Image (tube, rainbow, N blue to C red; front, side, top):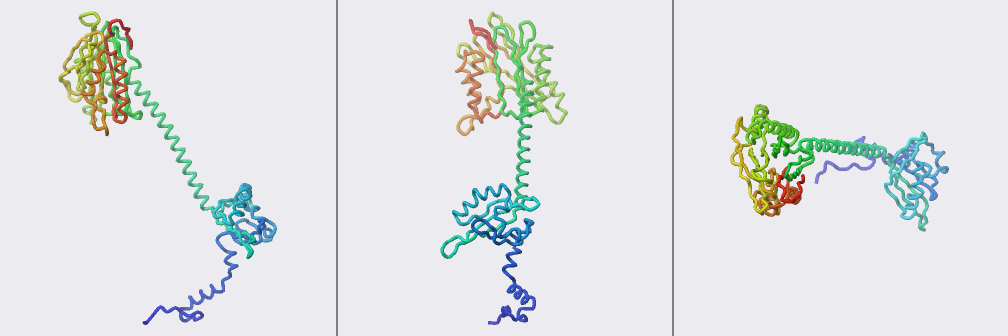
Length: 428
């Protein structure tokens, strides 16, 4: 079989070419001592007490020392920093005596000018024929690039940690500001209404977002009071702006005209004129009502109108309960003009009127959180708690909300207005 890549015979320069033969000759003449002295890492050999018997030029150059100063006069530990020497005496040397070999330990050696050089140190004990330890051979790898890399990693980690702490602080300040702003959109406390008890509750689905639910109770003069509860579309600062506008518009409208339909009509006009042409239409649902003494002592007459809002629930003292129909009523602010109608009822001693936002009825329940609490769940709750005062109804409904857990993903506002039962004290 013919071969064209036959290897040249040693010494035959012409067979493999002059360059290959010269390289091969140079390798044969290369000295192991030269390889040792010029190695890219530091080498040294010490007696068992640590006295340096041999050291290569590479390590001497790192340290800025000459061979006469080192060999036979210094120990390996003398090349280390104070901390490195302590570690060598308490950990490295005892471990080497026990195991006969130690690999890849980080230490620092010191130059004559005081500079520290990080190195990775490995040592092995050489034994004689009788098993007697004779000397220790140690290799030192320059770890300055690795140390720089580790320091850069540490620096970046510290920068990231500082950024994380700053982000947490900013988030805490933002959450505090959002909480203050959210509280400013709700009444600090409900005013006392003669002959009645009132209670309210607001659940924020996310502390990091401003909610759009709102409620209020305020006097109209004489023995008349007004109340409202609603839900602005959207979340965040834009919804908060609409909430603020809605609250003050309804208050001002009620003082001008106590008719619930007139109040919602005014709000509809304001919202539509303000946002319809902005390219970002805003609207809300709302129930607005008034309270005044009824035709008989101890009774309260209620007149209310709804703009696209879930119907109020009346819990009667006799143990019955039901939704108060509010026919008609479009979302407030969608159209230039919207029809609203008035619904009326009379609250007797022990009766409670409950208003709520759809976060309650839209809450997801059951296994897998796939079912809705819905109107059926709310009506069943109302029947179970009919005859209870407003604060007890709201407390019980708050427990229901807490039980939804992650199924409650929308803000929810509750407002309960009830006539004090005979012989009870009025509370707010």
